Amino acid sequence: MYEVLFALTVIFCLAGALLLVAAERGLPVIPFYLLAGILAGFVIDETALLDLAQWGIVFLVFLFGVHVDLEAVRSQGRVSTAVGTVQASLIGALGFGAGLAFGLDPLNAVYFGVAGALSSSLVATSYLDERTGARPTYERLAESIHFTEDVLGVLVVLALSAFVYAEEPAVEQFAVAAGMIALALGVRYLLFHRLTARLRGVPEVMMLVGISFVIGFIALAEAAALSIVVGAFAAGIAIADDYPHSLELVDTIDDLEDFFTPIFFVTVGALLSIPTLETVGYTIALVVAVLVLNPLVVAFVLVRSGFDGRTSILAGLTLDQVSAFTLFVAIEALVAETIARSLFDAIVLAAAVTMIVATYTGRHAGSIARWLRDRGLVRVLGESLEDRATVARNLDDHVIVVDFQHGGRQVLEACSRLDRPVLVVEDNPTVLEAISEECDNYVYGDVLNDRVWDLARLEHAAAVVSLTPERDRTETVVDLETDVPRIVRVDGTDAATEFVERGAAGVIYPDAIAAERVGDDLEALLSGDVSREEFTRRGQAHFETPSEPGER
Image (tube, rainbow, N blue to C red; front, side, top):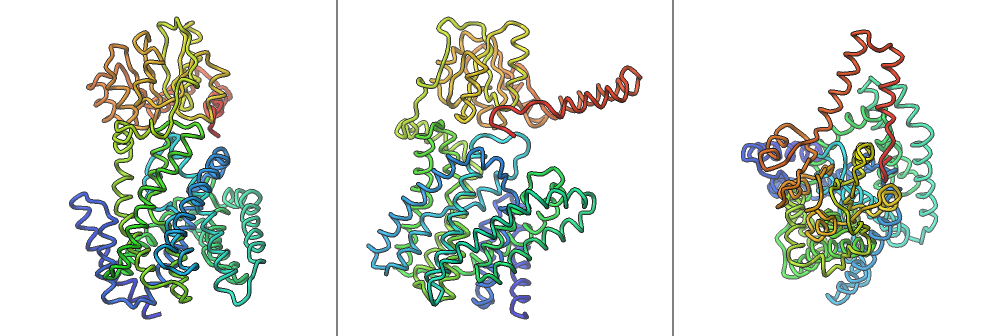
């Protein structure tokens, strides 16, 4: 116990001191976490570090499961499952072959293949979670692909536990794990919603409920001789946050993330060691697989599945870090003495390198996607537009709507009343069929692609209404070289001022519009113009506005 308390004290003292430097200079925190870990590694025993790293991974896997929107995952399920499985299988096979070529034995070659194949849901997801409101297509895709990769990670952990660490093969562990996941889904759909509805308004009790769930599932996994990471994953699914009454629980559980994130990243830094030439060779191969091959394979499969180049690249760029499951597997293998020390050191070093790179790519993904498009990557991947565009040859004086799924139906209804033709530009193929049923003219593609605007007959349009929540796409619309009026969606008054100064004819600020609508209804109620029943009916009508295609 003393060793663990001492390790935690060192970790938080060093991390706190270095994070002050990062905050003052506005720098990313992850490199400073790793630096704190390198310093902590000189005074903390490796056994304590391995234990803390495992628990850090376990709770971060649980927290990722809590934030997963299973309904959104289900809507993208077929594509995400195919993408995640193809990417992991292909890179895993290549990694296994490369491991054998390096001279590793078959088991260590498996570890090498797993390290290259599984991508992370840590750094990328932290940036995805920073956004609020409407979520762009690539975020929903990325989340569902991460979920698929984590399921594959659970299967890898189970396979190693059943066939490598066990004295005799224990195939029944898969059935037990399936039963635990089924139990988690049962709790989620039959019990948890009712429980959180009753406890609403008592955050302390809500947090205790969440902690009790994760500890209970971990204990259940231990009792069933399963890895604790399987229990944590099941617990996250059991209390996922897509119910309205669970939002308060999620807010309280998020405090756990602030506690375990430093532990995870600092322990990774502390496990770094001076690499040998052999370790450097393994590390280079893993970094190439994770930073280059994984995003390219994901982007290629998504393009071939019908997504535009930008969405495919952005989703691929979220899978450019060594997975937490890989680190968990490596630590378990080190404890079991089944992994070569040089390979373990390479996995840790590759994790640190990819964490730092993922910090950059997470912040600048839009610019990276644009740079890659300008250099012809999207064309190489095979993006095609013409076969998914339907535009009347004489279309004129029309309104171009960008991102129909974020409010386009209201624009369509307004234009219909004015007898004004509409053309939709959309980048989500899963809603294209619904759009084709409602709109006579549409173009599937990325607004950053000049060909999209040619097909949309921009110079003949009366206006462009951009409803996209993504800033770089909004900037593209604002910066179009045309005299056609452009109205764009913004997320704040500062952005509204900036875009108007850059040439936007107008802005749409959803929060302000919603507040104004509520204010008008409240004024009508207080002045006696409407009854309480009418006020309630209006509120329900606002709340029950039909969902757009592809959204819940």
